Length: 313
Image (cartoon, rainbow, N blue to C red):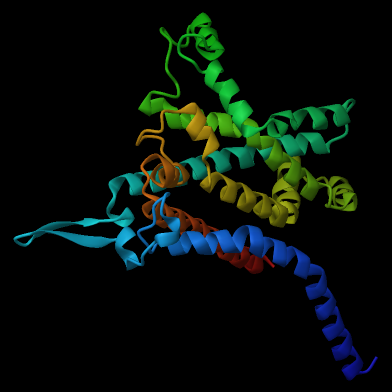
């Protein structure tokens, strides 16, 4: 084919791609872009729940402004001046970093086991997905009873084996609440990580392993030099998806804990201001900041991983 023909074919493929993507983009704009734009708009107004239609523009007042008491005295107000907001940011990032790290390690181990042939492998693959298939609210309520300081089975088992002397309120004690939430999240979403990593493992050609075994390559070195580099793109995709989900954590913390400063996430902070305190504009500003924090972390992570992958290539 000549150069003009190739150029024409490329344009036709591009137009066909946009035609196939158009319905999805329209639906996405309707269910995501428009609500996001409205939320950002409300963050710059004095909107309240009962007067959304009469909201007035106030600029960055909900984000940060100096409130003057008179006589030269005053203080900074707004979401960015609220210590509770910054504590919720730290709680969210701490939760996401710890939970995703543990889930990645456990998911990789489980995927490596499920990738091998053994009797009943199909049944085990189906069973491992049960925690992930249970709705989050249901699993959170189930674990709330299991971790209960008076009726929970966790305390009963630990006291029977002598690991603790008295019952612990795992989700109500500031020192243990976040670790309990991480443990429940790891139990629920590790199967998701294992499923994605297993899909990446099954894309690796078996010929590579056969050649390595014939050369006498040790198992750990085979994993480090062959398996891990080949599944790294799929592994990074799984980490990105889980990080996005973890940074939006709401339901687990809302159900399991009293939502104090020790456990409050950015999503819960925004929800409290939106509905509980009837500070709709303030909550919209917090929701907008939540969106930009997640976007910034995700873009940074993707760029760093892309640079690492290009360096390896």
